[in-house]
Length: 75
Image (cartoon, rainbow, N blue to C red; front, side, top):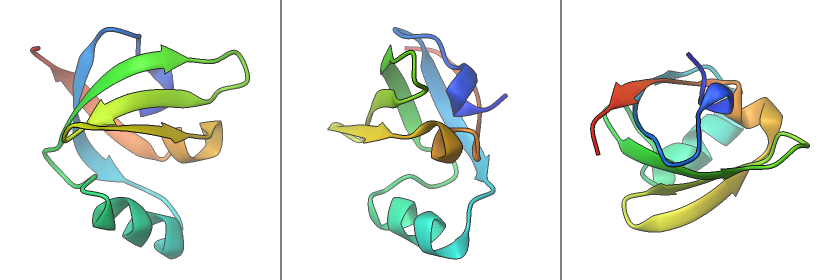
């Protein structure tokens, strides 16, 4: 499943990313790599995702969240 399908309040684990190279490297620099735990905080109607990863709140657009593949993880 992709992060864009995430449900607020649930925790997920990053499995892989399929993004353009520039965006992928930026997310890696922010710590969003394979195995990173994420907690979805909010999902806006326009597709914007707000999540918490490694103690930092981040917001990304729908196109980016559709390129991040996750699996469910326990809180």
